[in-house]
Length: 469
Ligand SMILES: *Cc1c(COP(=O)(O)O)cnc(C)c1O
Image 1: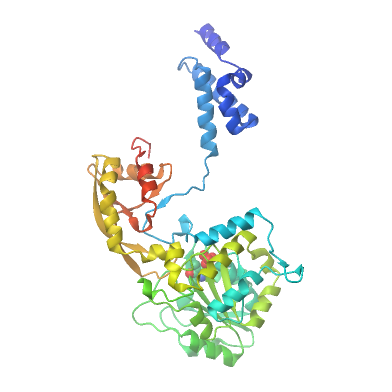
Image 2: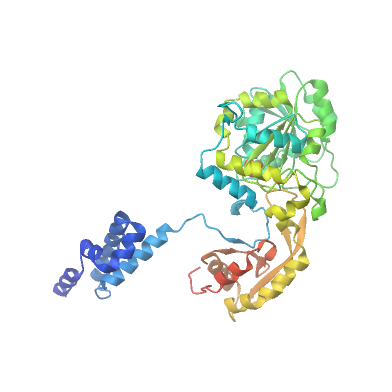
């Protein structure tokens, strides 16, 4: 027995021999000498362990190379993978929020490929400013005196608070001390910004006199926060931004309004609830308004700060600004996205987020009926597939109670819930993963965000229900 094992090991080719064999050529070509050598070494070590344990016969050189190839291809696959978002949440934070417009993609590619006038004034050959590329556009679209942009809205809030209220007090209603998720909690941001939080009012009711009573010589800012992901209903009272602006004005302190998602246009023509636009928030008298780039605006991740000139100038002088700035790639995409807003009528054709949000239920239902037979045949007889009505969410805390009527496919197991979990896992294991949502004993595929039906069907043809969950 021992002797035959030793003999087996002797028959195993060396790393060098495998590499020099003709069959390893493709492996070397695709992954390079270093990675190919490591992979073959690892495969040989595994094989020796299997042989030692008494398993299997000596594999052929082809077999060894195939294993090494599979190993490297697995490592090579990106972990940040494109997928089908059929969750029904259009701006899904975990799935990357807004899909940007083609114009923004092209602008970003150009900025990556070639040198750009990032901080260079082409008119006089002198140093320019990063913000120059978006300042005028943002002012034009919001009516603000000045504007700047940082990494995301969390950064915008942090930077603005630090500038306006660092070492001083910031007054906020108890009804607006929000947690957005992903560790964005207003009180924590406040303390990291070095501002002392002064809470006023109660959870459900805050009055003008509450704000007035909290004002003193230490007040740095009055902060209004959009309660993005929840609503307080019933016996409630809050103070409008315009009333707060008056209070702030009398006290000679700035009002800052964090809109969260914010929107540059009225979205009600697209069937969404009417929300104040950024322009309106500026007109209401806020000194600073902050909002996100990748929520309803439909651009890349960014945080916009617009408002009064002297406040924006102070923000730009804050050394923190440098740590929170955006790079040329995103700046190019932001500029291109904002430019689309100059022609609001054509936004739904050009801005994927808006296009998806505006899709009509009837159109989605027709699509569901069309693809049902293919989905049924892919999942097999262990499941039943039917067209269902459902409601999509906007997501990212934008319009939390506003859902849009949609349609999709409901997949039910004929043999219990475990099979459904396995089906969801198999969908995730596809070359381009399909992400639905498990709800009421069914796997729901909300088709609102299914734009590339052909790609979906071709990927689905490889659904493998034998993959371990
Ligand atoms: C989403 C949100 C933020 C954070 O914005 P990001 O762009 O995700 O950093 C801040 N404030 C409010 C009210 C929000 O809704």
